[in-house]
Image (cartoon, rainbow over all chains, first blue to last red):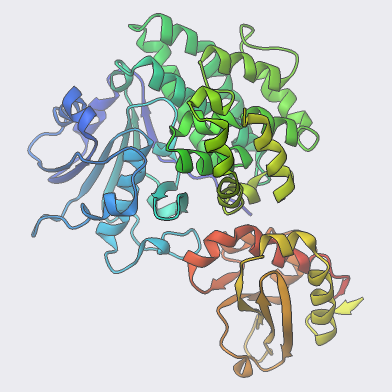
Amino acid sequence: MWYFRSPQIIFGEDSLDFLESLDMEKVVIVTDKVLAKLGLPSLVKEHISDAIFHTIDEIPEEPSFSDIDSHSRLPESFNPDTIIAIGGGSVIDSAKILYFKIMRPDLDYYSLTPLEPLNIKGKMRFIAIPTTVGTGSECSWAAVVSDREHHRKLELASPEIIPDYSILDPRMVGDLPDRLLKSTVTDALTHAIEGATSSWRNPFSEALAMEAVSLITHNVKLALTDRKNLEARSMLQISASMGGLSFSNSQIGLAHALGHAFGSLFRKPHGFSVGLFLEPVIDFNSDSVANIYEKLNLSFSGEFRKETLKESIASLLKFLDAPAVIYDFGITREEFISRREELIEKSLESTGIIGNPRDVGRSDIEKIIEKIGR
Amino acid sequence: MAKFPSEEWMNEFVNILKSSETYREAAKDWEGDITFIVTPESSGERSYAMWFDLYHGECRDAKFFDDVSKVPKSAFSYSGPLKNWISLIEGKIDPIRGLMTGKFKLGGPMMKIMRYTKAAKELVNTAAKVKTEF
C-alpha cells in the first residue's frame, strides 16, 4: 500500500487569475525581500480583492527555525483563512512550517513527521506560487530547514503540509536570473533522477520523472537564450513540479543526502549542491537501477543525450555551468578536508540514505566525496 | 527456525544484530532502549513484547515478555499487530513505510529518531533476517 499525493495544480498563461475564484478575507503572504522589491507579491495581490493581508517578507535563503519562528505569532485577532507562499524553496518550505505552527502552536517543530496526524488539513487554505524552476516544494509534503547550530539540514515531512493549490504562472519566473535558473533546473533534474530510482519508487514517480527530464532538456536552452520565451519557462516550471511530485511520492536519495550536508556545511546553494553529487551517485547506483537509468537517458533531448545517463547529465550540467568539483565552488582542498568528517556524518543522518536504491555505508560515502574533493 | 514471537526468536534476532557491521556503524552514537510490541488483533488475544537495551551499536541486554504491562518503560517502541509483523519479517513491508501507512506505530522522541533513520531501519530490517516460523 502506498499513496500518490498532489495539490491541485493550476498552470500556464494567466493562471494567477485562478485566485479570483477563491473567497479570501484574511491572507498571510510569505515571501522574501528581493521578490517584494521586484513586485511579485503585488502582482499576486492584484488578483485578490477585498482581503486584508499580513505580509511576511523576511524569509532568508536556507532559513533556520529561529528565522521562521519569529513570524509564527500573528497579530492579535488576525485569523487567516489563507496562506500564500510566493517564492523559491526556502520561502515555500518556510510557509509550510508557518502553516503548521499557526494551526498547531501547541506542537514543537519535531512533531512535523509523517507518522502522527496533525489534524490541520482543510482548516486554512494553503497556496504555493513558485518563482523558481526547481524546488518542487510547491507540490511536495517535505520542508527543509537549516539547523545552523549543528550545521545540518533537517528534512521534515507531513502529508498535511502539502499545499492545496500550486499556481504555476510563467510571469512569476519571467525575470528569473540565469544563474538562479541554472541552479534550480539542476535541483529539478536531481529530484527527477532520485524520485525515479529511490527504493520507494513507483509507476507514478517514474513517469513524472521521465517527463520532467524531457521537459527540462527540451526547454532549458531556449529559456536561457530567449529570455522573452515564457512558453519555455512555463515548461521548466511544470518540469520542476513534476520532479517535486516524483520525489515527494517516492523518496530522495544519496545525492540529496550529500547535497544537504554539503550545502549546509559550506553555505552553498541547494540546487548546485545536490547537482555536485549527481554523477558520482549515478556511478555508485548504476548496477542497482541500470534499467531505469537507461529509460531516463532516453528521456533526454537529442541535444544533451549521450550514450549513458551519466554522460548525458555531465553534458547538461556543463551547459548549466554547474560546479563539478569543490574548486568550482571556491572551496579549497584544506577547507574541504577540515570538514570532511562532518560531511560524512551529516550525510549519514539524512533520510536520503534510506531512500537510496543501493545500501550506503560510511566507506561508500568516503569514496564518493573523494571524487568531488578536488 | 524460531517461532515469532518468542524468546528463542528474540535471541536469534540479537545474535544477528550483534554480527551486523552495518547496524554497528549506523548506531555507533545511539543510546536508548527500544521495545518491539506485538499488539492483539482482537480482544482476548495476548500481546507480546521484546525489549532491547541498545548502546553505541551494541545490544547489551534483551528480555521477552508475554505480559506487556511488565515491560520497563523504554525510550522507543515499535508496535503493530501480528499480521503486520509477519509481513515485515517476510520483507513485504518496509519498516519506515510501515509507519507511514499506519501498519506500525513508533513511540519516542522524533527529534532523536530523525538523526538515526538508517540505524532504526537496520534494526527493524534485522527482523527480516531471522529464520522464522509463524
